[in-house]
Every structure is written in C-alpha cells, then in structure tokens.
Length: 189
Image (cartoon, rainbow, N blue to C red; front, side, top):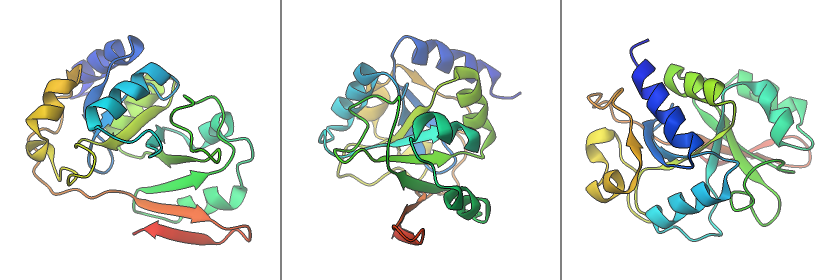
C-alpha cells in the first residue's frame, strides 16, 4: 500500500492521544481517538472551537454503528447504501464515545467512510476517529492540503504524507438528520 508508513505513524500518534492531520473521504481533517476526551479537547483547543459545537465521527463499517448508537434505525442504512456522496448522519443515543463529542441532546454525527486510506486506518485502529475540518473555527475549510493554515500544521502531532500533492478541490459531506417518520432532512447539501 502506498500509505502504509502513514498508517503506522498515525496509529502510534492516535494510541498516545495525539492529533493527526489527514485526508478524509471529503476534505483534509483533524483527527483523534473518538473515545478519548483529552484528545478531543486538544482538537477543540487547536481549532478554537466552542465546546458546544460537535464534531463528526468516522467509522469504517456500517456494522460498527451498533457499537456506538443505542437504537440504530435500519432505514438509515438503506438510505446510505443509495447515496454516492459522502454523507454524515446525526444519530440519537450515542454510546461509548468521548462525552465532549456527544451533543447535549445525546446526538452524534457519524459518517461511514468508503475511501481506502481512512477505512484502513480506522479498521487497524479498531476505534472510531474524530473528523473535523482542518481550520480554525469560523475560517473556510481547506479545499486541499495546500490550503491548510500553517497554524494548524504546527498544532498537530503527525501530518499524513499521502495525497498532499492532490490539488483536486474537495468539499464537506452532506449532513442529514431523520425525522420521527424516518424521512431524511438535509441540513447541508
């Protein structure tokens, strides 16, 4: 694999509670162990992000939803199977994640990744990853690695080398919440 060295370095960093700067299935993101509240706080501090503004959690396999959501609805999985675009879903009943990641109402935003690098990293880490745009809160998310601010690069413990030269502009995931009838409500398209 062309990104094996990056995976190994990311695993070392994540296991010791560090922050990584990495390419996701959407934009470049800041990541950490989604079960480690101290690591989550490091990202919030780096981004200068208010504690009440939640971040996304990445999983590698749809079956993993059952470990982190108390009542996963089957219609959500059906919906996700039909989408081509990376889609983040706001779920109710978060379980086993860092408490400072979970919304005040018990919700959590989760995306199942299909991109190879992220999938391999999450599967080998065996835990979910935080994913939040690699920018200071309130600033524009970077469209590619070259657009990541130096302040962010200096604040992380490891920067992934894979895809740094890719200048293809990326965009954030679609954000969806389901109402009580099981109908999707698009919050960000």
